[in-house]
Image (cartoon, helix red, strand yellow):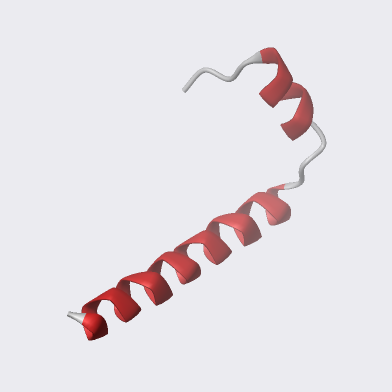
Length: 41
């Protein structure tokens, strides 16, 4: 994946922990949304 200069500048000071926490949160919310959609069907 190739990042733009702007994206590279924004991400340059992120720690590994911050990236991992963001990925975990994104997965959690995706799971919550998927569960709600399944229950509505």
